[in-house]
Length: 339
Image (cartoon, rainbow, N blue to C red):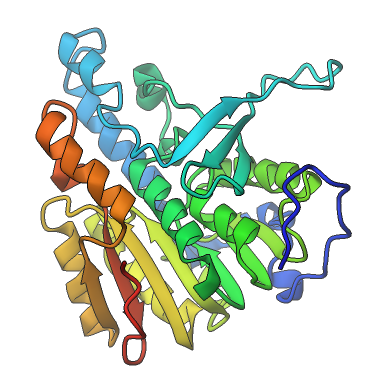
């Protein structure tokens, strides 16, 4: 479908194919209090943030070691340009900092985001518990968004991003570039989804989505209420760098299995991070998925990877920075998705 990226007049929002199950998560907050024992109190984002906080608490906040790790050593594969937008409405006194992320290799596609590309704030880590997804666009998410633009013609039907953090950049790019009926942007963190809700509205007002229905909501992989409401609905599921917590890896595999249609496909981008990628693939195979793992799936990403291996040894660690692509299907693998 044609996409209007020039900021044309906002189109009438189509009705959601999921009806009341997905409606910008506006009523989700009202239902959180009634979850009782259905969902465990510790979600993925909280556990991730707690883990980082525990590490930092073992050091003095002002120590050179902490100051060094508080800055992301490797931040980007340079697949998107980032331009700060100046607010045209001078009456707007909010602190929102909007930026335009434009694809370097597919410059006809861009998204409006509000993010923080600066250092991790150590004091925020120590005083919070669920903000890791609210920090920035991580390398795996950036790569996934680029890959989705490159493979935009393969997407169809309903698409969901799991664990997309504060930007859900991959799912957002699918909503902007692909001929799909709907895109659900999700994360297990309420604060992340509050931010994503604003991104959806901003990009909708800019005419980015065409006739695609785009929504956002909290989806926790270990929550029966969240998963059952969406069961068997999606043609494509994607997630980036969501495999490293042992206690939630099996929940993610089960969520993907239940959310996918029988003919659906999941795209998982994640670095090796020790054994975490291998363990995820093992669990997915045990769950009945057909698995295909790719290391060299995109020429631009691979070139940056090789360059960083040669020149960026002090800032680049292949084990934690280079995302592999894992495709999961319930039947035989389709035609190769790599270049």
